[in-house]
Structures are given as structure tokens and as C-alpha cells.
Length: 118
Image 1 (cartoon, rainbow, N blue to C red):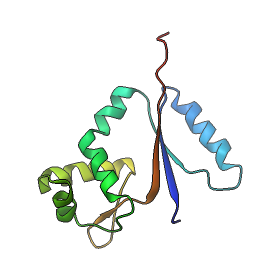
Image 2 (cartoon, rainbow, N blue to C red):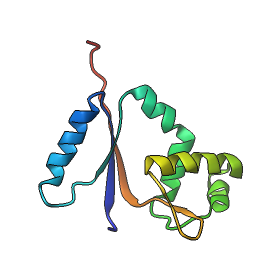
Image 3 (cartoon, rainbow, N blue to C red):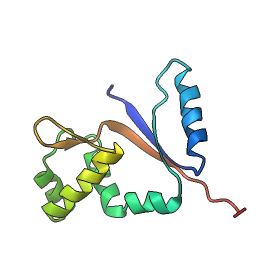
Image 4 (cartoon, rainbow, N blue to C red):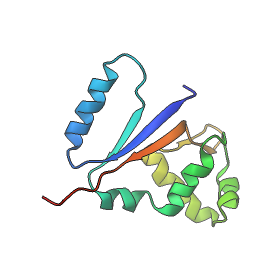
């Protein structure tokens, strides 16, 4: 699917978020994909500015080698490899059969709310 989208949410009620995604999927058309973090700390702990830059660099770039990705963002290959591993585990990027990486999404949206503490 060429126009895949990902919405990243921050919601303690992960079961509710999962149910809402299931209801949207029952609509019959592609509603995008979701990745939920239970807390802002979990979100920012996983998606640091440097990791976000990797995903942003990969959107629309096609397959890129780890070495080339490191060069594009001006970082050490070993550290980029470590971040790629985590981003792959989260599903933000994918490894290719040739050993490179790619971002399968055309759009990544973050949906986060700051509310009065209860």
C-alpha cells in the first residue's frame, strides 16, 4: 500500500485505543495504522529527536543503507544502527531484504493531549 499512514497516540487506556482502532477497521476502508504509548515519558523515551530525524529522513526516500542513513543525518553508524533497531521494533521503519531500511509510511501523525491532572 503506497499511501500508508501512522498515527502515534499517547493514551493510558491502551485497551480503549485498541478498541477504537478495531471499530475504525470495521468501517471497511483503510483507516491508517496506530502506535500507542501509555505515557508521554514512554513516547519521548522511545522517540527521541535523533530517532525522529531518522524516520523523517526515510519518509519517501525508498530503501537506504544504514551507512547512507548515518551520513545523511551526520551521525555515527553504530549509533544509527542501534536507533534503527528500536525504530524497527516499534514498526516506524522496516528492514529490507537487501539489508537496508525504509519507512513504509507516507505520513506519520502524532496525536497527544495535555490535560489537567486528575
